Image 1 (tube, one colour):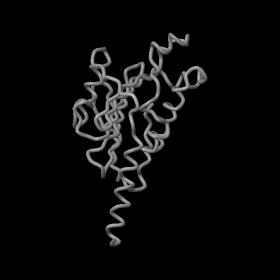
Image 2 (image 1 turned 180 degrees about the vertical axis):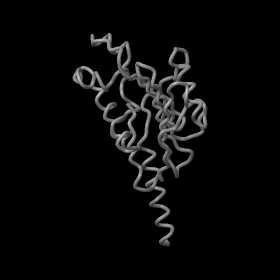
Image 3 (image 1 turned 30 degrees about the vertical axis):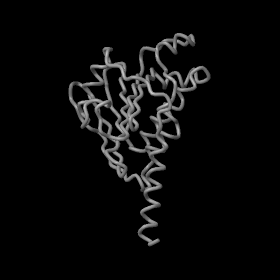
Image 4 (image 1 turned 90 degrees about the vertical axis):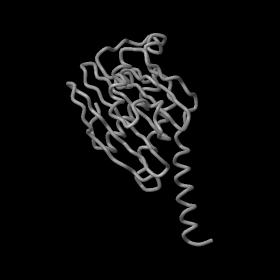
Length: 199
């Protein structure tokens, strides 16, 4: 076996093993019926594929953050093939669309941190932190904070997650809301990776 063939096999193995880290264990349908959905669709227009369900990327993860007083952001982690990864953060405020962070990583290089972060906190498989969870666990209802919606496509699997005010619940109710802490740490690590403030 030639040296070039050995290197190619190693790089292919590394690429496949990294992609294998991202899994959706239980697919859930993506809704398009609430007031927030129109905002999500508006934010999605900033992406090459308007909707995650139409995306041709093998990995397409979109995290929509809605602040109580109107600031909206979209974090998108996506691939178009096995050789690259894009991490983008869009901000939409006062009807002005802008990209505030844009970077491409090589999947076999040292910059696989965003995929490592997704796998580390298993964010695609956390339980919802939504109104039903909050009320059934008799938690205080918080209106002034951040709501996150996660749309994800990994291969042919799709899922949708809701996290209402995870920062507040992680700080004050961490025992009752175990899913809040890893999600907050995931957002924090993305901020550190991109040197960009998402909150």
